[in-house]
Length: 365
Image (cartoon, rainbow, N blue to C red; front, top):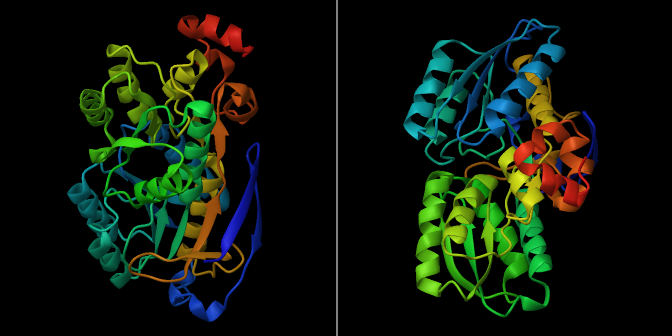
């Protein structure tokens, strides 16, 4: 796989790509040259997976809609649907997009394998599909996400740093994401590559539907199985689950480092207070911009060669044109230089009355 290094400045994305391998290895889905050439008057179907995680409605949707508007001089139309974590509903939404004759679909799959036949339906109807954030199966035309193995490594490295010399003094609990999400497997892979041999994993779970209440129940089970005095840390794959995990830990009187991901406001506030050790800050603007750029190009029958020089393989397809975005470990030390500097949150949003004293303590003003 050819890899991309993506550096993010406030509101901008610069991509430096070093490619290797032959262009012959890529499939023919990187362009929509067979489609009739279209101008700015295009219709883009946007399918997001759920609304429990704050990012999708707060960041991804508005950022994609804004970029498509910019790229089409305000003429492009976005048809939006959210599956609310229901794979069957998302399949129906793809059918609706096909009936609605959209020119391209941006798809963040609830279940990467289950959506395969729907992606094929879109392809058969001449509608290219851009996989967004999660690499869906089927004849995907393009893909953008973060380097998800690196996300897991970043979490694992942060947990090891937090544990320090105590890394082998007890056991950690690993709370992975949903087994239906291919990203979760990548996060797990990256975390294990860092943690294996350096910590003792007492219990490990794949958390159904990424739900905080399921993570909470799993954590309660882990505490009962391991014993509260033996747990020294928790690998949590995202912030939502971290919230459920920390609730269980606090109820048992346990104070240990907990990781996260997504830099959700509640997660950032827990980092401020020290309840959560870190999160992974994933700058959504460059990911959303990449999806919009590829979608507009495909809808207009243009090649992706100048946009996505990276490629990835899915279980069903090889050489999918892709853009991968880098991530940052978010801790108390760099809140101001990441989510605040990039305009994701203001200090006032983070440091409400409840968190004012904690913010003052770490110098976040």
